Image (tube, rainbow, N blue to C red; front, side, top):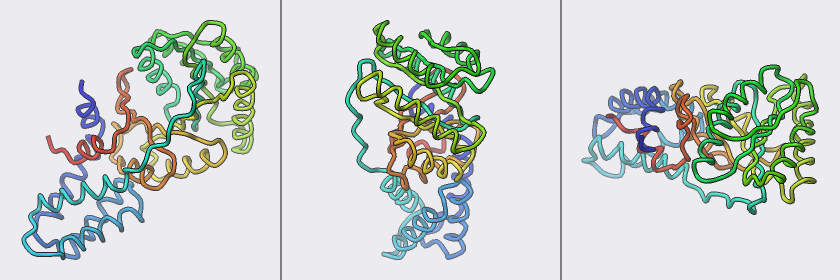
Length: 303
């Protein structure tokens, strides 16, 4: 299935909300103040955020007032360009390629970390990489078993220890195994919740230091996995993890199960951290590299 088709399918609930509301709000050449207010509420319902919704509505108001004769399709095209402009920013350059390339994957419990790691492992393996997963989430009893299932499905190796083991020690073992086995990529899973948020962040920092000592420059990437269905809370998580761990990229999951896909716009426009991937389903292949143009095209598609 083509990337755009996957995006359309994954964004179906958000697309339905936008299509019906925008069609009504922008059906006239000069949208009324009520129509613009309705549009702003519509955007808020998809969780683009207050500031973004106000900015888009104001931009549309100015555009519509620049001259008569603008059709509904012209107004929609303008909206698409404005959203694209908000999300289009220079992508950060990836760090130096490691040997192996170590990717630390973080996020709260329930965000879809395990599923995302399985999908990324499959994607990388299909691209010719030798992938190894280190399951450093030793606090959740079923974490190792679940990750083992995904590793088998993706056809990659995995390192883990018994529940309750030191997460940093598992990360160290994973990096060491990656070096010994000639892995080109090591994906390090982590816990999403300890007794307090402070404990979680300190444990993740410890894992980071262990990886730095074992592999030069590691971790070469820190990916934060956030659940898009949590709406604006996803933005809060991005800020918290970003300030503590030097997050280099964001993966937004569960877009297929929510009408709050506008949070992608909010994060892409408000954070200095680039959105790297979108999770759009449960299958191994249901992860797509984020492309602002393709995202906007899928968001406004009506077929």
